[in-house]
Image (cartoon, rainbow, N blue to C red; front, side, top):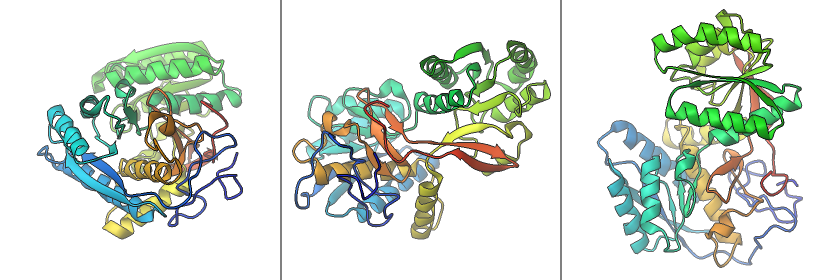
Length: 388
């Protein structure tokens, strides 16, 4: 089912036009019905990490508020009263801010950023009819009244592995950091391979240090070659072990032009990563590039600097809130409304909340070729069905 203007119910956002419509990606029989006329003003609380004393947190906070206000200005027929609350340096402040927002009449909470703060905020308003759309990507805090907007390893792995299997690659090796994030990524990759009907030929962890990687990777590469795996899934990110891991894998005989490299993180951030020899031919997943570029350009023009990647999540949160406020009627922000299977469209493309509180996104598959990003499988424009 397309989210275009030919769909039975599709509601567009002025500023981005058809391709980036802020809409319910409506499908026949979807659970949310349109209601006539503009919605009343919606009270939204935005919880941001300002007040921690860290300049980086203040920058994140400003980016989130900027993006949220940009989204509000783009809404058609919906008014949003946005109140911004700091979460400070600890979970206690996040809980206090959530309670304060509820007392001030917030109908839904957008944020916080960090997992522990999201958990604290959710607990503070649990059982009081208010849901939390957090910017975290940690599935451990999702569930109950907390829904996370961040991209999870599980969702990324599922998209990449299903595509790999469709291309005839069914045997995988998993290479992961021995860190909490690495273990979450490893588990997600393993589950994705099993769900797609593939096999895990080898599963390796390495110590998260330069010396640990240097010592472990030659042996890991040798075993990957011996396993005849058709693809290697890496959990590392560009700020961590990925540059060294991919370099050593390649130098020790695992040719990425023969054995497909697959990354669970963004390999195009920062752009200098694209020039690394070890990532050439590698696959990774990313939001719809066309929509992301439109958002980045608009943000740059409005605020004089490029947005942080997390800023788009604030826009998407307002997108979902605005669509529900306009079309869902009574109980607009209930768990049932948030998790309707048709989903929403924001500046990252289509997305929907799962009943477990995590988010599924329509991702593109990209490959690094000659130091550049090439999309080899575009992001879908609609979801195929419940949970698909």
